[in-house]
Image 1 (cartoon, rainbow, N blue to C red):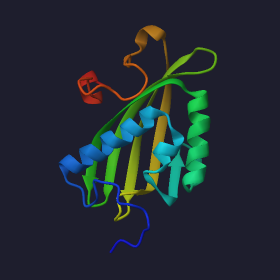
Image 2: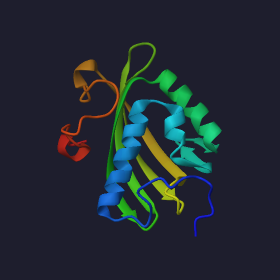
Image 3: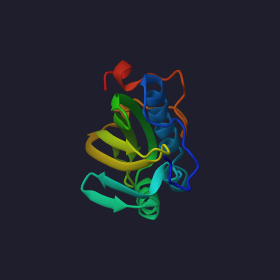
Image 4: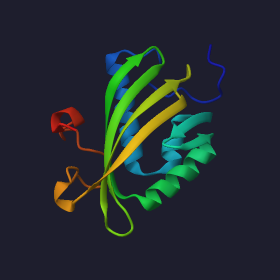
Length: 160
């Protein structure tokens, strides 16, 4: 029984292959918008996060974290890919490229474990991330800022 006052956020658990892939792409699209308020709406008001060594709780903390992140990480472009799913949980892997304030470029690799409530909102996000310094000539993500084009290669297709 859904006890939340939040509107349902499709697709809802339990996930199957197509709905898990859809949920991952929706998350990628939101993060590529670099809009903290938009991204935060996918999480429960009391959502718990572990992002690297930071621990966050709630939408307001998530919004503040993301605003600071995208203020530091310029030219942010992200690809997410489904790794596994079961019931109300999804594991995704991701890679994103960005540039710091001094012009240095990075590629960040990571894995996320997500747990959703019955309303399709993420109540738990656990992320492990590693950064790799790259040269401008090593960049692989060149689409215009925003949503990754549908015909762009996936992480697996790119060998990442």
